Image (cartoon, rainbow, N blue to C red; front, top):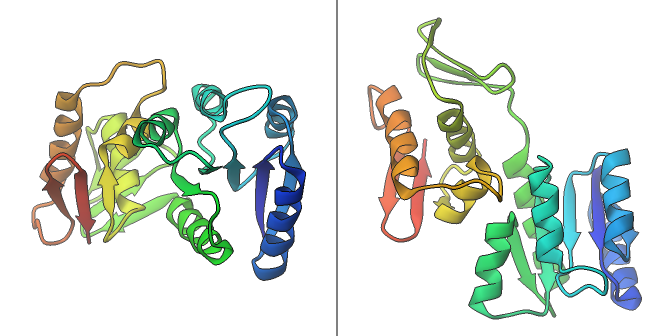
Length: 221
């Protein structure tokens, strides 16, 4: 069962959404209509996904997600919003969003996106590729059984890449993964971490990272 925390102040829309998700998907939905209640619940319980509105009476949903991310809450989050402009979309990803759906949307599409996101974020404690082993719990990388020097941010980036096989990892996704909202980042740092990962693999056909100019990276393994 996937536990979802829904923040939405439109009661009628919320009821319709909850009914559909709980009937046609393996979802258990907890609904709140204000940010304070959501924050209380995130401290008390663990959720697999947040569904968030942006236009709320007590706070902007973008600012709320920034607050969650700054407290190291990395729970996947999808914004359900009536905003359609590119600037809001861009700001949403910078605030830590993993996906967007613009109202009105198809409920089946929401279910597909939720399942895809949960699958992508499913935790792999240890990953083995060739003679390399990545341990995300104790933050180590070994080659032929020997621990090698590897930066924590590069390891976090590899985890993001591993979760997105045959997909595109955007620059915004990388920034959200590696840096808190109050931290500075640089394009040069991203390139360094990507190159660190590439250098791990003797055979570049095992784990390929293709640069997509002005977009991000395509991952295949």
